[in-house]
Length: 148
Image (cartoon, rainbow, N blue to C red; front, top):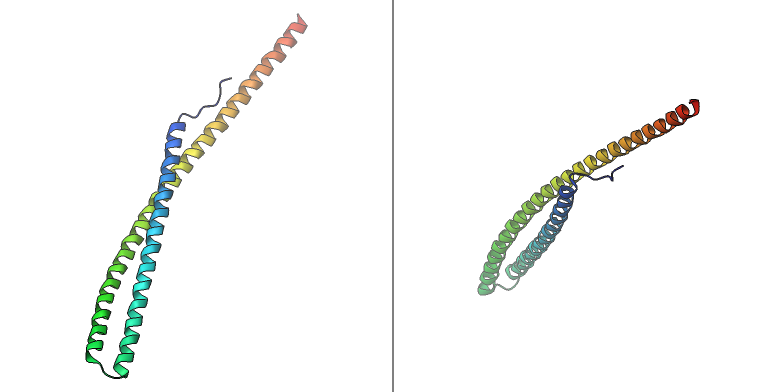
């Protein structure tokens, strides 16, 4: 009997490569998101430290130039924080898009693998049926040869 061959084996191998690429893209997007979140958190800490410094300046000896410099620094760092928040949102959206692509790639691969399994089961059944047929022919040939 012929050897088992899956007609869509080439498509399955392409789907496996696409899944690997989707995994790599997802991992890259997650790294970018983590880096953006870390930079955002650092900017938030800088804002808090400048606010604490401003609090000290206001409650201590009043130095108007120091207070105005500190307020300007807080304004600048808050603008930077807003930019970092936007970067986190963009990175989060990219992660979600990569997650969807990855889940689609996994679903397509699993579908093809199930088709391959079903085709193999059909092949095994056909092989067993053919084997039984050959055994039946052999038995009936021996039976008929013994009667003659």
